Amino acid sequence: MNEVLEKIQKIGIVPVVVLDDAKDAAPLAKALCEGGLPCAEVTFRTAAAEESIRIMAKEFPEMLVGAGTVLTTEQVDRAVNAGAKFIVSPGLNPEVVKYCVNKGIPVTPGTSNPSDVEMAISLGLDVVKFFPAEAAGGINMIKAMAAPSEQFGGVATIKAMTAAYVGIKIMPTGGINAKNINSYLAFDKILACGGSWMVKKDLVAAGEFDKIRDLTKEAVQTMLGFELAHIGINCDSEAEAEKTADAFDGLFGFTKKVGNSSVFAGKAVEAMKSKGLGAKGHIAVATNSVVRAKNYLEMMGYKFNEESAKFKGDKMTAIYLADEIGGFAVHLVQK
Image: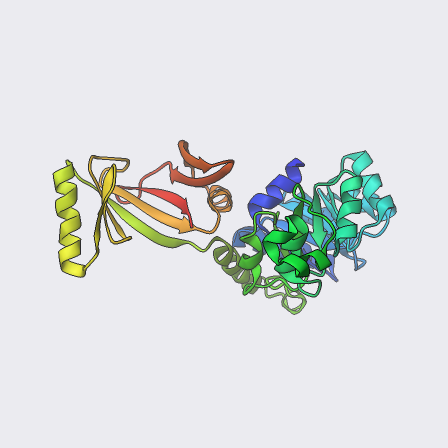
């Protein structure tokens, strides 16, 4: 997969932006970056789009700026010359796709059915946009296009598709919001989701960029879904670990469960049989995506202990932060 698309996958949400006035480009970019989404698909539906891309790309070099609603090769050139790092189109125009592929420009054309996906594959793509996502069948249709029919509904799925496209990644856009985004991102064939609920046109027009920043933060928190998973307590011995777990069991009814290296009391307390990471112990924070959470926290300036990472196949499932907090090592864990 292209490096730009890999970055989009780690970010998780691509704000889809419509700008009528280029003067709004810089404050909008600032709001998105501060909110935790240093990415934007600026639609080429307005006269201000090209200049807006130029401003965002120049003033916020850390931001991944792309052009959306691109219909012609001439628009591709204008967008790329302005600083766009990727191209998105509402439909699959073979001329536009071939032009981008030949120039090495990441392009994600719109698809809404298996024939579109098959055409994209024949043009050498491994990522497509699914648009309009909700109107075209939502996550169930995407699952139907991404995996064998028997797995997702038998005859109904067969009617929705003619083949399985296992190697494809999909970026749904259209009707995505805070209530349904995680139903999309939970499916491993989803690259990222495009959405505009945090960058509503009326907020931009009113200059309410603080509100956009806050909505962006909320979108990131919804996507990542941080929750306290458990607290690990360092003990000097197995006997002390069992005694600690027994105390929580007796006090609160947290059932004791003995494991190889620790003793759990319910799901929230883990008494370690020997001292592990952290002077006092560790705190596990569960998230919907360890990879996206790690990417977000790194953007915030936090560092990780890369040697502590754990994987299931090629998917990262846990990793510790480099620094302790209050004497506790802190690690992310996949929900």
